[in-house]
Amino acid sequence: MKGTRIPYPKQKAGQMSRMAAKDRREELIAAAFRVMIREGVAKATTRAIVNEAKMPLGVFHYCFTSREELLQEVLTRFTDSTVAAARKTFEGEGDLGSRITRSLSAFWGTVELNPGEHQVSYELTHYALRQAGFEDLARRQYQHYREVHEELLAEAAEAAAIEWAVPVPVLARYLNSVLDGITLSWLVDRDSEQSREVLRLTGEHLLSLARERTRPAAEPSPVAEPSPAS
Image (cartoon, rainbow, N blue to C red):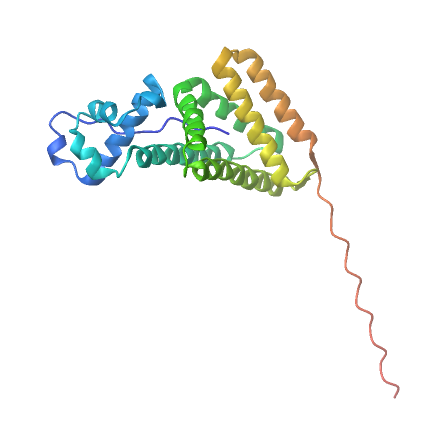
């Protein structure tokens, strides 16, 4: 599961002196994302980010304690936007098949529309895994993805009055792994036709794992106690 474009405000000329600390943080986060999309995480240095934001270096250290804190905020924002997009695309009417198809199609639209953002998310995940003390950030990122997939699968099952043939946590991990893999493969070869075919197969497989909900056994009727003899 990946996300949609993150709406960051662009700084207007002459606005710097009037920006509050919160607004400056937002602009630095937006600038960091632009630099990383254009040049990669490795080149998103503190100086490159403040130059992109058209701010003095001292403002950066006023808003963030380190470059790592800023990168952590960028990764958190991307994860949150991905989660919000996943929830939105799964909402609406329709049977289970149409909801799955709509959700996978909407997801793929964001990948093809914003490839740079998805590539940055992978770079940041690898960066977090290699930086001492940041491993937990990557773990939380993917745990969050799996939790959202679990919720959406549970909601879909409830709406369609079905149950999944495999445990929902396993199915959520499977779905997240497929979407992760197909996104990364597409970023390498840009083969949209085959990627969409894999998504179609994924949807069909999900449907094959849905089965009629097992009805709980009816509770036996209470046995009436005999009336006392008159």
